[in-house]
Image (tube, rainbow, N blue to C red; front, side):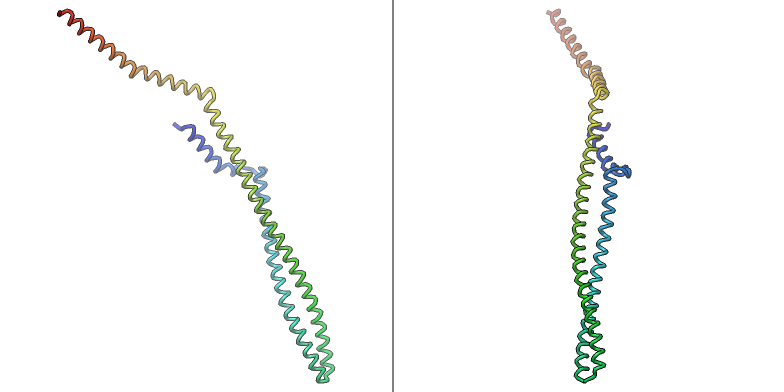
Length: 212
């Protein structure tokens, strides 16, 4: 026979195992789970953009290094051509030096902008991760509250059924049945045995009196 506490334990176990699986798409926690999944996807997209920004920053740095090397090279060549009185070569070297100078300035500006943007993206990504973590914690808190409510409802339902008229009647019927069994076994046997002993004692006393 299943006890009341076993019933409660089974109900709690079943509720914790399958309670969340039966929810539909309109359930608040189901909607929250969907929103969290979408937020995680967006956070991952930002992480990929940050990775790309790192690559761009490194590429700008490589380009800038190469341009600065060519700039220094053309500057030196222009000086050599000037000393050799090769004006045509000197002018060509100075012209390319100016082009490399312009490229270097553009690359420096692009590198600085990329660095600032990268720092800002990394900051926002950290904020997104913290916000996402906070939402996960809130989701667990809500799930805990919901489970507690469901378990309490189930437990109260079992307790209410165990104290209603039907349950009380069953216990009373069982009690009467047990009382009847006891009265038909040990008590009855004890009374008959007691009466028989008294009758035997009375008979023995009468016989003694008659013999006197």
